Length: 131
Image (cartoon, rainbow, N blue to C red; front, top):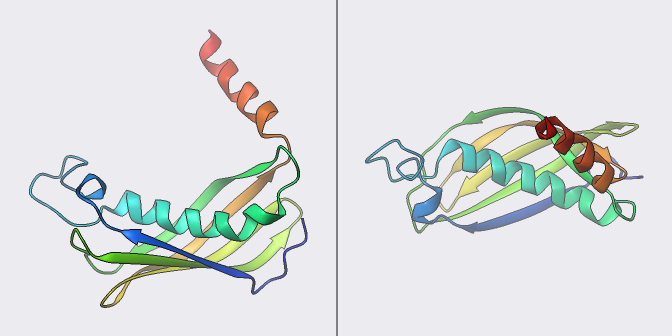
């Protein structure tokens, strides 16, 4: 895969109740939950890589460093941007940021690795539960 440093992608959606800290067990805290913020950042990095996957390939996240800077209520739009900082073979390192309609809500770095054969990767992982 040949993706140039500086390549970026942006994604977004509206925060729903099922993506809140309350829904994850932190009762009464009806704001965008940190694990979903991380998922948003990972999805933005995946959007940079997706057009370049080999047939049958994909990627997996291997590292997230993130500061959750501000809370976002249900019903507000959020967006994330990932920008490729560097790549080294199958390893891709991104700068990631997220915003709601008012302010920056997260920033950090995210690393992903290319999986050339996702079916083989998943089969190997499933062997762990075989017994």
